[in-house]
Image 1 (tube, rainbow, N blue to C red):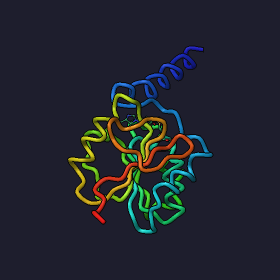
Image 2 (image 1 turned 90 degrees about the horizontal axis):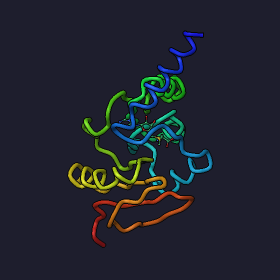
Image 3 (image 1 turned 60 degrees about the vertical axis):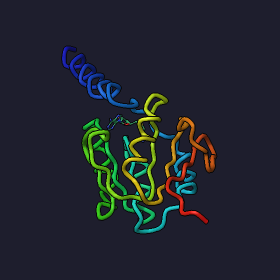
Image 4 (image 1 turned 90 degrees about the vertical axis):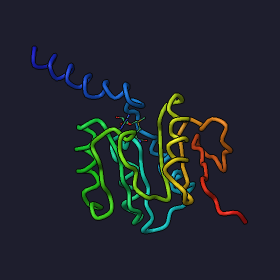
Length: 166
Ligand SMILES: C[S@@+](CC[C@H](N)C(=O)[O-])C[C@H]1O[C@@H](n2cnc3c(N)ncnc32)[C@H](O)[C@@H]1O
């Protein structure tokens, strides 16, 4: 009985401590996965970053489409799970264990996030500071304050940064 307590305690600790740094684990619904890629409209060989890649469902879909995907995840159990899940696409899918706020984000054409309201401004500032080339950002559920939404569907919001002038 005591070992059950330890297991539950361990799981609460591993899944709970992330709220100090970002959103807790709550996966994007399966029906949202395809619309994410429709909005991002990334081509084979382009790069997608996922901040808080959870169970790897979006990384898997990216790998399937020949998109290079980099996921950052704080929860070691989810990192392990998503590495196994995306193993088939390991040539173009990378899962990095760590806090995405403290990592150097690679050059990319797309970012997917499912954060919390309180991190959206910080996200915007980091993108503006980091990227000087065109990049599309899709956020599930939460909007970037004071930023024009370029498209939306199924609770997903698309933002385009650094668009070339027509
Ligand atoms: C709301 S879930 C979204 C998971 C996945 N993106 C999806 O849409 O299915 C947020 C994820 O981000 C992770 N996370 C939260 N803060 C983080 C941080 N600062 N660095 C890395 N991962 C973080 C959590 O562990 C959790 O798996």
